[in-house]
Length: 258
Image (cartoon, rainbow, N blue to C red; front, side):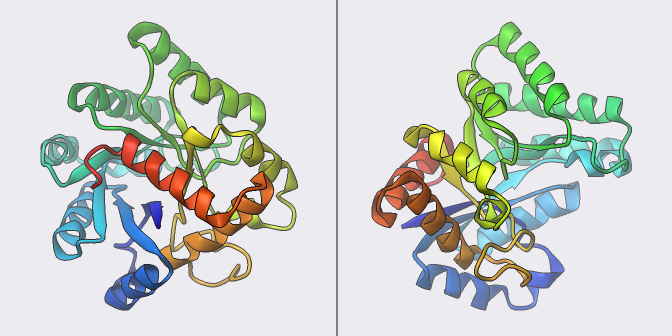
């Protein structure tokens, strides 16, 4: 049994055949998929997909690259949605210096809002971090020092072991997507081999980042199995052990995910 902890099922590349996509996921052993909001509209869409498909759960938030376009009432809607029982996480939130869609100060402001909402609701954060390890560690360290351990996951992790250890020490989980399977990703696989078994998660981030052996195709939740197989090899365990551990971890972190 596998859980895809991060997908974007509302994406147009999946929406036209979503029922078939989810059927293939179930055939591959996937029992739950968390579809993640990046705007007010996609957060509402995630809620609707969770209502329509029992395999799907929703996360709600405003992505750092979407924050500049958010209307004032959009955040109010995210807060309202977070109070509903069908929401299992807050996010996608975080920081991004790869793109320049949102001024960095505004990214930090929205990240702080998500951090606070996680504290108030008890829901875990889904954290995006791209090309900003120093900034991310600074913000999370300040939050940890002021308010204690963090509840959440560093999604689609691609940084080094030093960053991973810092995030683990603050209470966070580490999730790996298709990048960990790529030919040039041996350093990332070495990091994945060192993550404690009880803090490891799987995700596709579909429709992006399709793993080997389907790299270059549109990604979908069924392909989380390829990531699980890669991590099982890297860690020297069976696929069954890896699947059991990561599924237990997902259920522990996303407590509403039953």
